[in-house]
Length: 103
Image (tube, rainbow, N blue to C red; front, side):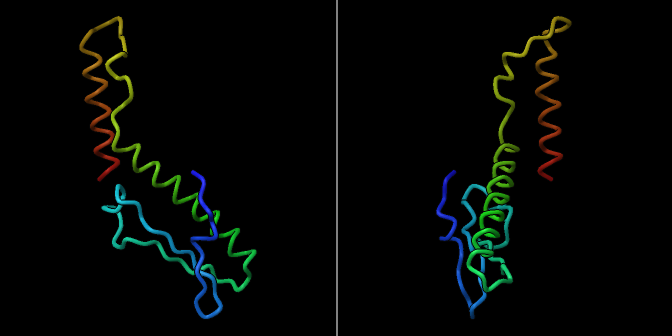
């Protein structure tokens, strides 16, 4: 995703802060609808660098949360020579692992 990183930067009393809205599909994991972090700097250059880093880390984390909700792509195409029921076993095992990570 390409964002204008400076749009996540706010200045309060001369100190830069990172402020970003939490996307609706991951909002259930947060207490607030916004992520707001003091960047503890009065330097615009340092603030931009920090905001880019924080934004990228949030994007990666949110992407991981979204992937946890997904089933294994093309699971129905997995073949096991030993037993046709093994696909069901793989599916069952993945569901248990996914549920464990969510909790």
